[in-house]
Image (cartoon, rainbow over all chains, first blue to last red; front, side, top):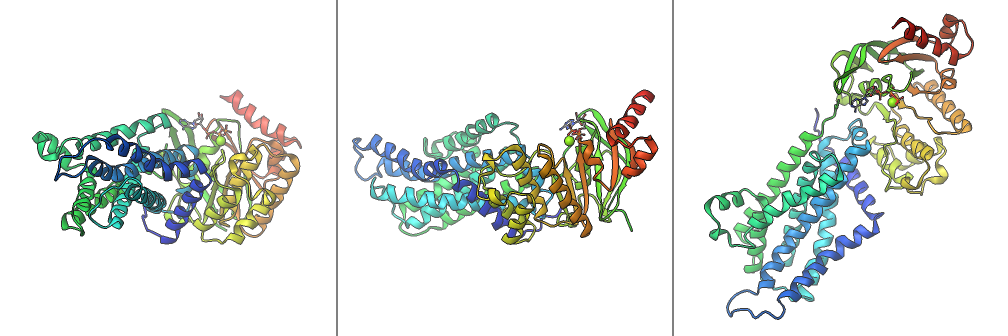
Length: 255
Length: 239
Ligand SMILES: Nc1ncnc2c1ncn2[C@@H]1O[C@H](COP(=O)(O)OP(=O)(O)OP(=O)(O)O)[C@@H](O)[C@H]1O
Ligand SMILES: [Mg+2]
């Protein structure tokens, strides 16, 4: 069971995944436009609601968090379906008979969808800060970085989830299972310090919690904080862990 | 010369059933070996064991001197699955170039492989928009492009017209003449005569391992279709 990494094979795979994406014009359009459109709806939702003086506007708080949630959700879905197709169409079995290692394959997916997420985040952040006046104290580049790390987490969990789905119907239903609890507990709906102790403990082990905290840090301070870097590290570590687990589900020999 | 593939007492279970029963056979290097047998006889299962993706119960499969599935074999063995395994949302050329890249070959090698299977003119089309036979050939090209020492092809000529079939078989023999070992499964008896060596499988058991001429002589008929049916029938009566 060699897991020798080859940057050449990883990038060939990332290129292949991006080419597949490029042939699917509607998916590309939706990837780029949908988060901005949904954010616009949120903007309008609170546009006429007065903000108590001295507090951040609700849209600034929620909108910023959504910049981390969108790429996570979208990339989770897209990847779990893409990987399920590889498994059911026979291409995965074929790839596993080539020199491509399992980690090359998974990192190829992570790279491809990470790049797609970077483009998505650039569009969304630009639209949010210009058209919707989203207020971010820190550098926007950090928002994009966090969005990309979130997307890679979504990709990694999607790759892992695809191992447990036998059909696309099952795969799409993993989305609420994986995403919603993390979203409920990430601190957006109810501040984390107001959660019951055991819920807080659950929240502590869910990676999206750290992604949201990182975004809040960027939103509140003009420079990168230590907390933010720790948060980003935790999300990246969770993504790597999920990738490792996903690699373990790619069995070369099947019965 | 040593056998390119040596299978010894191979037993494979799929689901709750035993689908290969103590199969032993060998594949000579630099030849085209045909694997023939009725549907469900275990051809694909045996080929999967040779490329190392089939979980085996007991027995050994040695490929190019290494245990089947060994990591260093992956650059030396090419496999074409029975149902085409290429990306429908990529063009024929993009598919070939990806599999070329995985094997460390360049774009020119990809184009050459497409020409070899007669898809040069369709290179720019999406695989999803191809006919069944074209899709199968695209899948074949993605294995040819790696120029492996051993090519394992599971029914590569299904759904092809006679002319294309003749051309592909000529290509297989040209590859064999240049030193490649090929194992080709088929349902079609007229293809048996094109093989240098024939393995006949039925119900997971090896019925015969011989040249077409030997098979004809043993069964006393010139017609390979008849020759094939006779051991199958004999086994049927004996069973
Ligand atoms: N995924 C599977 N799970 C359980 N049993 C299987 C599976 N695939 C095949 N089998 C069984 O294994 C046996 C051998 O199948 P195999 O695919 O090797 O046959 P084959 O000779 O290639 O047939 P065909 O010519 O139709 O392709 C069959 O009885 C089949 O029902
Ligand atoms: Mg078969």
